[in-house]
Image 1 (cartoon, rainbow, N blue to C red):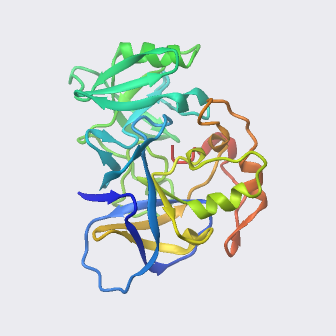
Image 2: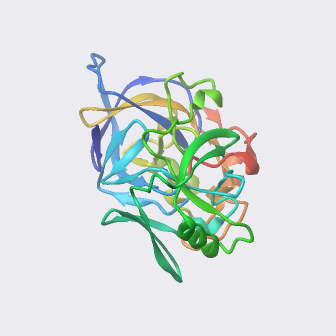
Length: 305
């Protein structure tokens, strides 16, 4: 376990190729490095999203673990909403999910939402609760059912005509191997409910560059990053291959994160416009290579939420 804190220096020791306003990263275990480092920026913001597609929790520091960030008993994207057929649900289908706040209170995950009574889910679920085989992009991952009360709460808040349920990923469960989905991963890489990797990184400069081209400005919350970097050039993160944060946290870049319609959901209102910032992102270059048009578009890519 290593800790990431805000304002920790970001050091770079290798360069590669890549293109995107956000990048997916994997956590590497501590290793003794002999390569010379150079400073490229600082960690300015940290976010953790306990329930996939819910509102991000801003943090001053977080533990960096194999499955992503951890703060106390909360783990990033370890709770998931699924349909009756156990296919995952995100804010692409239900934009109001971004209005849900998840916190940890006295051994419970507490979900809060506008005009709705709070829901408390035990962090340690009864072993009698069913374990479902859920599907994310058609790939299987387990989750323990959080119970009927949680199902009624999420179904009611989202005003769904079908029944939704909430599941939780537990340590002993079999994770997904993203190499089955993308060849650039390694055989030993693992994820729970995130789409691509345990961590998503965004730089303030890249966001500012984009906002100069937008009539209605957006924030980092539209992109749902775990780590926000300040002090680098716009799209400078496109050429980072490995980074070190502080003394011990080492991250390896995997791939640019494809963007989708979730970036068009207003994080304050839960209203989706289906257009910006995607249309502008498709039209501008980022760094030495143009941003590719999205082949997973609106039906498959979920922005690592």
